[in-house]
Length: 199
Length: 199
Image (cartoon, rainbow over all chains, first blue to last red; front, side, top):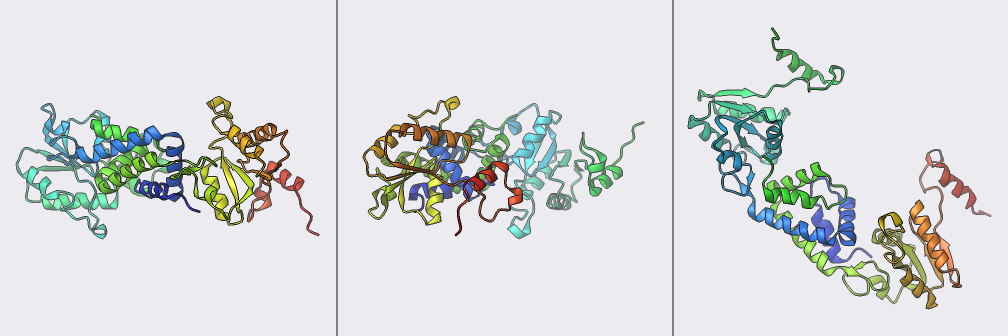
């Protein structure tokens, strides 16, 4: 005896969620059916509505219900600053610092030839095109501090080598609140090389 | 700036899944929207179909698409044996041992007065009624070896004190393949008390 077909179906469908293996999917399916039937229907509805109505902002490529997202449409943002990020979550993280009032460009990933993700998939042409219009005075590369993120930043710099725009990279260094003892060598080397004068 | 309303909606809806906190829900929502839109629609469909069509077996209370589940409907199962379990997953686990050919009764939980789960919610009346019909010769209590599971078993025994049915409890002891060194004291005490003669 296995589970009934519809239950088996639900268990397989739950596997599309990141980090959900066969055991968790089974636990989730049974939990929903035994205790949370209303919530399951709400979730079903939310999934359809999100998939059908959330597209991407035509300017910054973040997830958005409107053709142009709230930030790109806002008159109070400084359009001379453009921050390049790997994902909409990173955008939220930067917004939550409260210290940035420029605009964004979301790559939705990083260069990864092995997975077939090239410059096209990341909209790098669109980014270069936007910079070439001249409104952007500084391009802040805030891709992840990983090998792929660095490679992606490097590629963008290459593509813009003939453009006079100022290009910066977010600082690497020791995290605030961390202890030097536990910081890896690469980070510490960056922190020393990027030292700033206090007086 | 927060996420757009529909995205926020999806993130909240995902929180109904067990073990999914705010961060995982956010990661799941973005993953689905960025990479798995088809899978999200499939999941939505699977949720509705499961909730609408999966009810419970009128005999054993397990999750079933039919009024009576496959096992209860089968002519080849020994109806004189009735195994009482806390959940449909436990039923699957017992089935997978391949060593049991009796029938089941699923409580869907354990007694937990603090959560308002009493004998009614567990269908204990229905269980007592079924046993009193006389077809069941042995009632095997296979609730979890936890305080709540033991209390639930104890309660069932109390309810059947005037019935001549044979009542057994699954054995507590050292798990197969485990090492004595790592077995907790309570389990070891049970294993010693429940020792069996080899010759």
